[in-house]
Length: 564
Image (tube, rainbow, N blue to C red; front, side, top):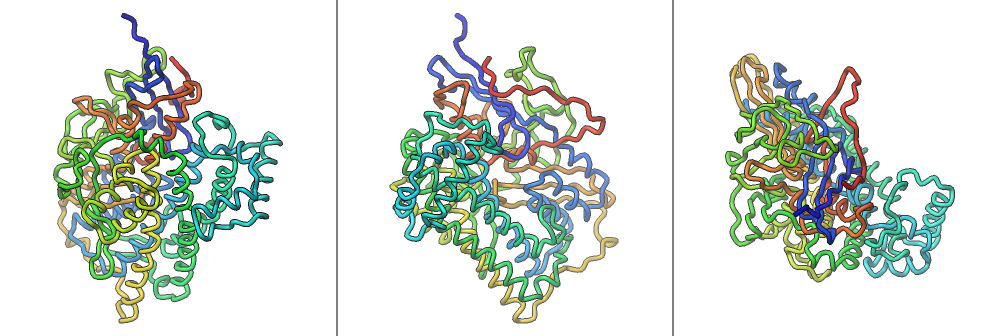
């Protein structure tokens, strides 16, 4: 009997970092039966780092991505420090944490408003809004809505309307405007678009805050093995004050725009939550970290299996493996990442341009924890923190659930991931001031140390280390092997490698693929529902894969939205 399954190809998936291809098979009712997430470019940074001085890896490794630069920079430097057992001063750790947490805030704001919100917000519909009704409705979600004046909302409506009338939609072009899956009213769309535009300014200012201590952004220059170099900045009270001022404005936006918009999203799309759309895996992992004020942990460490929130396992890095059974690399063996290899073995596509569903189909490997696929990211951190009764996380989660009539596992959906990310941004923004206070207290008592002195010539010629952190998109770990004081092997297992994982030797899917199963697509020519699920993870394929072709040859021909 001939199969009635149809295959949909979305290539490239836009509004993400990097190049991602999604293929799904749907039945006669347009319900997804199988899915493949394929990273379309090869990352060669590991190969580039071989033979390098381990003190230099950070400056190169941060080039893995143009967005997650600091995350890779810090993990790489920490891997060398771990290999040589170098302990950094308190001030160095605080500055590193301040920059990292600032990037959590910036990344989450950018993700929702500029990369994901247009999966829910119909830009064209906002042109039909009644500004006065929008003004009134905003008070349903916040006592003091962000920039909620009639004149401002009328200005936003006029600006968007002019874009549409002139046919110069720019970044709003090619959207699925008018799609039946959109549920916001014109007024709700207008409120969101107002915050979309304001978020452009907020994220730019937070980038400035990063540059205060990081030197510049992206690709900061403040880290060195043993500490930091931004000494003059932390000794200048004005620089600290400038940093705090920017973060206070960001906090204001999160409290009065981002969180209220999440409440609106959850209310309007409550049916999607209860239907468990985009649920995905039942396994979640967090490595915790970011201690402040006498070793209080911002994030908790733990592993959840099968949604069992009562029995949280402690994370053990020795249980992490990577394999390339379905990825375009030579060695298929499942190994501890530091023993892994990065030897490309590309096997091409089928004759009709689709992926080889029974062979290798992605440049993204399959990391596993104790042989199990894991979801990482804000949702995982919030679930682990809630389950472990974190004094930091649980009150925020509990309050949001009570205000919006949610249960804890409602967060394990496409809409829920957005809510978890917004809650996490609020947590980071409120507790970042505790980290700043720790810095001020150290300086007040004349602790101005920023670097741990060491003699490289006296360090062991052979060493192994790793840098392990929670970063905006999830668990990040860099592994370095050193021989003769040079890098002999280097591997990076990034959050998107976990979530966008290819299938393993047993056919087990990663988070993206699993979350797409059972999804009903209303219009096969406009698979908005697929984008909603995939975008909810905040993909960063540039971190997972990377290539440069110096001969400028064609690397591939791509088709978008084609149905086979």
